Image (tube, rainbow, N blue to C red; front, side):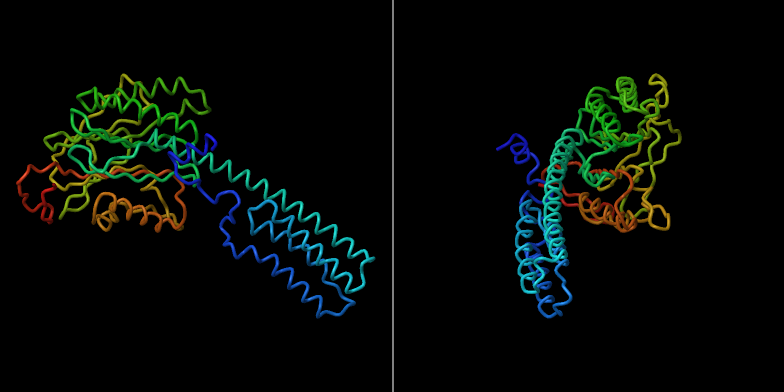
Length: 397
């Protein structure tokens, strides 16, 4: 087994797309289409006047074989069968010495060879794409680690969708960690796309994972990220690095249930509390995105709000609220969120993503990340909870 195959088996599962030698998106019955086409031409020639030959129509048969099969030898095999059919038709019509027969024989050979070449190149491209998807999947597992269902006093869920269909990773970032200061999370969006955005996101996430544990104050965590981002931007030399910045929102849920929020130019989080309208957690004072100001000038205010059991806070990137339908209407997240709020955090984000896709009617044009935190501290053994948010809370084992 190759090294790539071993890594794929251990980390990524089956190779994305069809495996070499399979029929791709076509069913196996599609392999009979070239034979059906060949038979139709032969039957048509049999019932046609001998003065009119349909032998040149056989040139389409090996081309059809290259379309319906991913086996490189299949167009050549069909080409041989087609040549045999062409000679039988020419012998029956007594045109073996005619130029139309010679041209048909040459065209069949040419189309079969072209089909073989195209199938070979297609397989190479699919293998390269599968390897790229494997690398992207592993990079995403390292950069954007899976979020556990429970982190400290909260239940968490995340949904991430890259704008590029096969990229699986982009410029959006998220993370949730449990520290001695409480649960802390970040959601951010790097300006731009491509490898430069991924490098910047990696720098910010690496700094957050360290600062979240070290800094007791959430605004100091933002300052730490600003310093790390400034250093990373000056170390990178890709085009447009001087214009890069990062919008992000930090949230910390302290052990006493107080939520602390720091916003650096990012869309405000949403608070979903049972029996109440969706509330945007706007701050009285905002700061620009990281990378705009000098790191020493990054002193964001901290907004504090007490959480009740069952409260949910949704953090998201602008790829969600800026998703437009064909008429150019933005997705109304505040209005649509209550309609998707039933069930666990994972179910809420799944339904919300499906609703965004239905609104857009096509693949999203920008990276979109959503992180949902539900405040649900552990219940002491034998304790019974009162009704909260219109629901009867039950103790968890």
